[in-house]
Length: 347
Image (tube, rainbow, N blue to C red; front, side):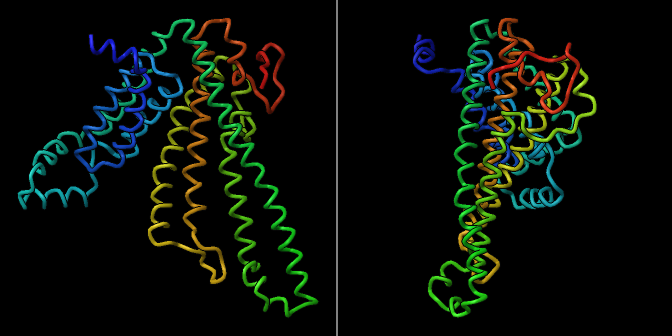
C-alpha cells in the first residue's frame, strides 16, 4: 500500500531517471571499486524509469549518460599505476583492497565484453520504454522534445545578444589604439590602465567564446551546423532518422559528456589556483571563461536529447505524429528528389 501511495505522490519514473543520471556521473567520479555500485544502481534506476514511465527527456538523458559512463571511465579495468598502488594497499593490509583487486583480476580480461553488455542493457531499457509508451505517451514524448528544444533555442538567443557588447568593445579598442598615434600621453592615464588594449582584446575573445559555445545547441535544433554529406541526402527519410538517432545517442551526447566531465576539472583547477591571464595586464579570473565550456556542452547535450526524442517519435510513434516529428527526416543543406522531401514542420 505504501509503495502505491508514494508512486501516486512522486513521479517514480522521473525520479528513477534522475537517480540514473547521478549514478552515471558517480561511475566516472567515484574511486575504482565504489563505481561498480554506482553502475549497478544506475542500471536498476534506468530500468525503473523505463518501467514506471519517466519523462522522455530525463529518460533519454539517463540512457545516453549510462551508455557512455562505462567506456569513458574504463569501469572494468585499471591503469598499470592504479594496479600497482592497489597491490601495495593489499600488502599493507588495507581493508577492502584485496576484494577490489580480486574483482579487477576477473573483469580486466573481459572488459571489452562487459562494456558491450552495458550498451546492450541501455538499448534494452530504451526498447522497454518505447514499447510501454501508449499513443498518448508519444504526444508526451513530442511535447518533451519541443520543450527541451525551446530551452536550448532560448539560451542561444539570449547568448546571441553578447554580440552587442563584443562589437562595442572592438570598436572602442580600435579607436583607442588609433588615438595613441596622436595622443601618446593617453597611455599614461588611469583610464587606459583600467581599459588597456590587452584587457579589451581578451574581453573580445571571452565574449566570442561564450557566444559560440552557448549557441551550439541552438544551431543543432535548427539544423544550422555544417553537414558534409555524401550518402545521407539520398537515403529514405527513415534511414536518415536512424542515422540522426544513433549519432545523437552514441556520438553527440557521448562527446558532450566527455567534454563536461573533463571541462569541469579544467575549470576547477583554474579556480583553485585563481588562474589569470598569461599577459601581465590581462584579465584575471580565467576560470570564469573556462566554466562556460562544460556549460555550453551541457546545452548541446540537451539539444541532442531533444532531437533523439523526436527521432524516436518518428520511428516508433503513431503515424499521426510523423509529420510533426519529421524535421530531421529531411535535409536542409542540399536539393533532394521530390519523392524524398519530408513533411515540413513549423521550425
